Length: 396
Ligand code: HEC
Ligand code: HEC
Image (cartoon, rainbow, N blue to C red; front, side, top):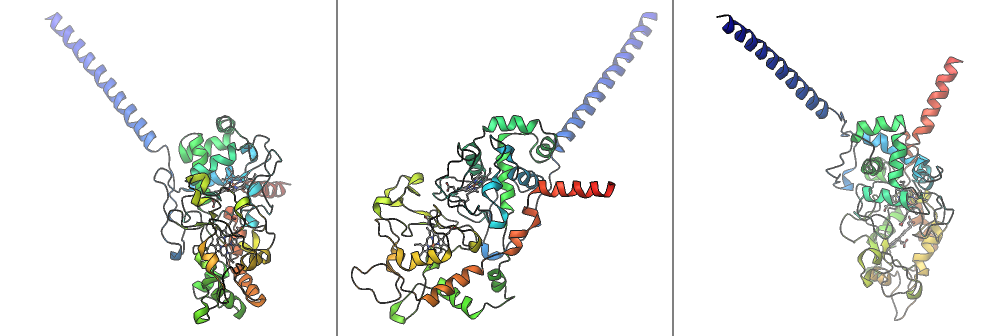
């Protein structure tokens, strides 16, 4: 009897202990899974609007546009910690007031040795081809971002070393945790890509004209027509031929294949540079470069992949009479002439001075002042030090 009672008490005790353990396990499992599922309270960006004329855009599935990633990307973009000497940031070569170019013939980074290329404007990058750089050698913005960081002349920063450095910084640790969980090389390039995706420009005078909000001046209107027309001497249609290659001139180039790459007659065969050949190894692609966006073109001098032209006047002089023959020169350029062609004619558009001035006036309507001054794209460190100073002056 006594034995039975003892075993019953033991059994009850054991049952209670088992129950408590089970409850504890359930609570632990439930709370960790809650923690993991809520570790990244990211805010998806759905708020930005883009003109339908730009067409569809695609964001990589594994890098959704979130407020947290964009904020982190903006900070990284402006932070010289990305370079080995802590002096060069992405913004050193991509300045907002210059539509994210640097005003130099070819850019200069940590080594002081000028690069081979002119800095490209960063705008409406969600719409361009998936071929970044003048020669198209990078397939995504995520991939692209790693190039300048590790390039010996640009930022010369070992990416793994950068991860270690950023991990020492409280603010970065917090921002990375919110955006991507932890500080990783992947997170760095993803955040940079996402910030750049938000650099949308859609309010130049030409955009306003497309929306029917303003009219262009007679000179700008003449320039617009010339820009859009392929000349045809049979019907006396005068044209500048520009749209043949710059058809996506509001965004960042063509969306499909290699359509946006051509040889616009900068060099003869001897001087022809590799260009798209670098990527494809196809001889027919030697000397072909990306026809970049012409948006904000009035503020992105000097021009062409090597910055050889200082002004738009020089660019137009090139198209009007400076074309050099080579085996990959675009047939669209050879063909385009505003007076009937004779055999072996010097390649020229034969536009008159007034027409050239009109095309340049039209190119100026592509400047988007709002974009160039948009505070959402500006240096966040300046903003923070302004806030700190304001705070300080309130306390003083
Ligand atoms: C030292 C100057 C320099 C620095 C620093 C620099 N860039 Fe660039 N950027 C350039 C130049 C020059 C090109 C064109 C290079 C080429 O075609 O090979 C370019 C091209 C690009 C392009 C391609 C645009 C297109 O339409 O194809 C992107 C995107 C870009 N840079 C983003 C960045 C980011 C992000 C950083 C910082 C991680 C950065 N750059 C740092 C000079 C620089
Ligand atoms: C056959 C195609 C073609 C035609 C036609 C053409 N372009 Fe271009 N354009 C290009 C290419 C390709 C580039 C880049 C070339 C390079 O840097 O090697 C370019 C570059 C430019 C640039 C410099 C862009 C920059 O960011 O440095 C300007 C400005 C320009 N073109 C304006 C025009 C105008 C205006 C016309 C008409 C008069 C015109 N283009 C006709 C293909 C063309």
